[in-house]
Image (cartoon, rainbow, N blue to C red; front, side, top):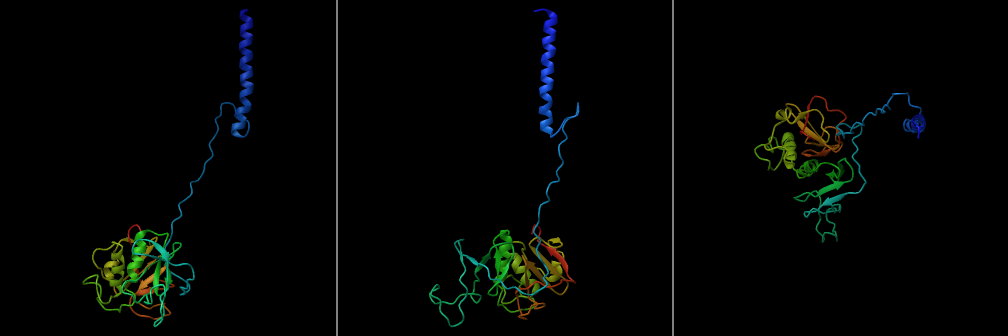
Length: 251
């Protein structure tokens, strides 16, 4: 083959390649590509993580709950909760022995979701929260029915009654978040400042209480329609003014 024929064949092949390559580039970029330009990647804003915020106020004191309730057994099995039997009544499920909040060891109650619920005078821990939050709630339940005693729960975590900061101390100790009882002034510097994701402590020189996943553990009957005294779970307050706000680190 002559040299000029080889040259014509070579240039013809280059032309065919260029024509066939252009549509491929246009298809990959959604349109005609400018000569020498490279496709510009689209910019996407990463989604921000959604963090659970522990509610610390409420417009209404209502704590009515009618959903499913479960109980954690001593063997770690979750079973449906059997409500306590009224005084003088029998229960075939428990062999006739009344059980409930009057028992020496309160049941470890659970409810679906991320909000604690008020069940028969106790707080039912949410299933979808960290284990430490559940342990705080179950520890607080053990104090229900005990009287308010000034200084109670400070010489030792074990006491016949508890005051405000002794109650908060006992609940935190139940989740291994406090090694020694603290008074209300000490709680002003506890943990980290501000509202927590699950647990928030309100403290000043004269009083301390805490909210846990939407319920309040407090010895004061303020904003509680029951007006019952002593350590117990209560509705959230409409405001928490006058207190230093802290929370356990990480919670």
